[in-house]
Length: 421
Image (cartoon, rainbow, N blue to C red; front, top):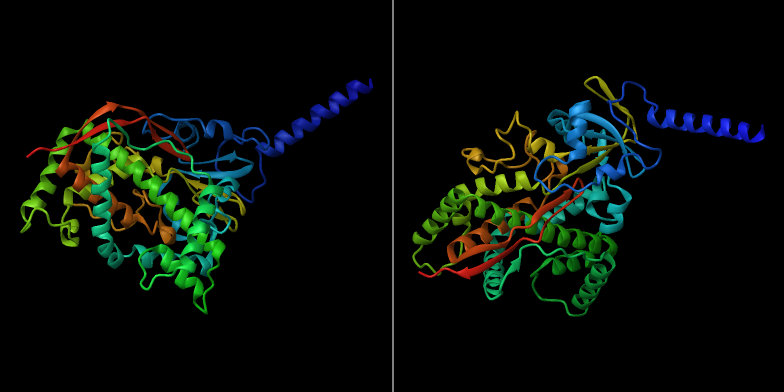
């Protein structure tokens, strides 16, 4: 009898826990959805890999079942997922009022507790302005020759190799990188330069300023994030760009013609790229827009509700995480005809100077990626050097392996050789 009683009590306890877990408290109507199992939630299907450019299966299946806004539970957090362009826009516009930037614990462990994505208010604006000084238009103009030099040097080095894996699958350990950055900062402190030449010099000057609020810990986290973003976003986008050029000869032809025309107009073909030439690359920008639309460099964007929020017929409870899904926006067939088709001509006559309801490759709102223009410059300069000086063949196609929070081209090898004129 005792064992039967324990069994009944245990069963009732499980039923009660499941009931409250699957029916969270809300001062209104929650979006539809499934909460999965207590604590675990739906974490496992969320991180299932996806080898196509399509919307991740986890998101796509639930969009079809529940609609554009639904609830779930991931890594122990209650989450509202948004694939609704209007709700996404509302979230970005209400940054700091109704929502604030938030990322899971694993993200802060990788990028640091003081990383720019985890800071708010004055401190965030301070760091944003600091980075804008580095990646603003005037700075990018000055960096253009160096970016072109790096692109040429890399391509020349790759042309000597039997094949190149366009994005090597390398796992940079945070501790190792941070140790390296700290050592480099200490070396620069002991041997300062007379003039600023890179971000280390800029950070060092800011740290030594009397009225600074920057600490060494925040500076190191910031440099790590910038380093990661520069390597990961640009290498992903460039790898996909080369795959698209290989798959779409018409796009390659038009891109090559645009860049060869730029060289023909110069007084000397050996002259370097100018800012005016960069700004004239109309088809290149169409090509870049379409590449980053399909690349979905930022596959998820997280925020947290600061108070109970009503949107349409739903209530988002205070404290819940909100996950915006850019792939669902970028692959929406009502906004993009044949959305999985690579079509740079769809951007003809369209100028993009930030995020919109239907394009958020670099985030949106006050947290729009301050390095977006830097990524575009890197891509445009690389493509200029690549299509005018080199030819290539694909050695191994590889796959795009992605989850809602991670993506990388795997095993894409090409053979590069200089063009003969």
